[in-house]
Structure formats: structure tokens, C-alpha cells
Image 1 (tube, one colour):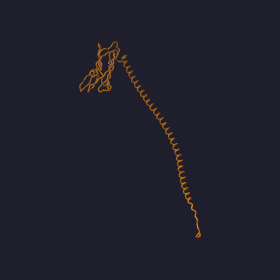
Image 2 (cartoon, helix red, strand yellow):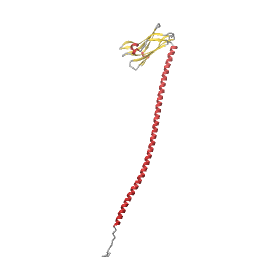
Image 3 (cartoon, rainbow, N blue to C red):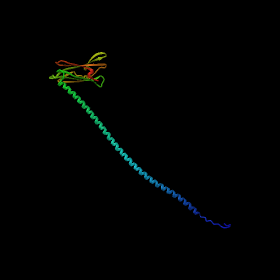
Image 4 (spheres, rainbow, N blue to C red):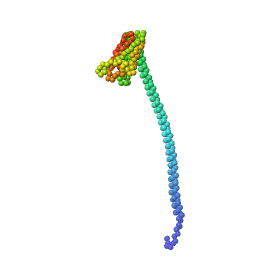
Length: 238
């Protein structure tokens, strides 16, 4: 360069502004593009999430349906089991009742057989059976007496019967008439039968009384008295 030569430089300030504006536009474009891309991807993700949620809801509904079906099946099985159990109980109860009735019928048959065709028994009046058993209340007992007229039963038996329990109280012997120890005087005394007569009642033994035996005596009118003694331990069902 020579001294004294004039150098002319051009001054263009608009270029600077163009560069700045272009830079800002680039930044804005990048930002908008990133935002749009993010929204697009987010939209795709939301669609996937919605589809997955719908699939889960369908699966849950199916599981609930299966659970309800299984619950219904369990309820049916439980009801069936209850019905079967109740039916079994009914059958068992009926069978037990039938067995008891058969036993009673057999006892009745043996009883009537003993009256119609007695074995090793003399003709006439007989104290056939006597049983006594404990009741639910303390010292209370039920008893049943059966008297019969064997073979010679052409006329009615009229008269009275006495029942006396012999035992010990306070170390001393004591005899008690059934009527004196019977609640509400439930023990009968009158005889009136042709073939047989059953007599039932209750007695309450005094406290501290130890029974040993029961004496029964039939006193028919114009006929010979009949008596029989029973050991308490043999006739009682404790």
C-alpha cells in the first residue's frame, strides 16, 4: 500500500441484521420442530396407553366374569353339600327311628307271645315285668309295671296293687310306699284288666335313701294274692 492512497471500505449494517434474524429464525424453527416432534411422539404414546388400558379393562372384566361364575359354582356346590348332608341326616334319623320301632314291635310280640303261649308259667295272674329308670331330675325315677292274666282270662281282674321300695336311710332300714313318694300322686293302685295292664308313674326318693329292692303285690277281689320282689340294681337303668 502506498502512503497517501485512499482506501474505501463499504459499510453494510443490514447484513448484520440479516444474520441475527436468520439465527433467531433457526433457533425458533428448531424449537418448534422439537415441540411438534415431542407432541407427535406423545400422541403416539397416548394412543398406545389408551389401547393398553382398554385391553387391561377387557381382561379385568373377563376375570371378574370368571370369578362370578366360579363363585356361583361354589355356591351351588355348597348348597348341594348342605342338601346332601341334610338328606343324610334325615335318612339316618328315619333309620334310627325305624330300628327303634322294630325293637319295640319285637318286644310287643314277645310280650303278647308270653301271654298267649306262656312258657314255664302257671295259669293265672302274673307280674310279668317291672322296670325303673332315672329321670333328668335328681332322685326322680320313672317306672313301668306290666301285669297279665295267663291262659285263664275268661273274667276281668278287679282289685288293687301295692308297690313298696325297701332300702336304708341313715343306717336304718326303711320301707316306702310308692304313692307316698310319688309327685302329684301319679302312682295308680286299681286293677282292672282281662288280658294285661300297664301301670306307669314317677317316684322321688328321699335324700340319703339307698334303695335295695321293690316289692309288688297284686290283691285281686275273690282271688289269691300274687307278689314278687325285684332287686333294685337289676331293674334300674342308671
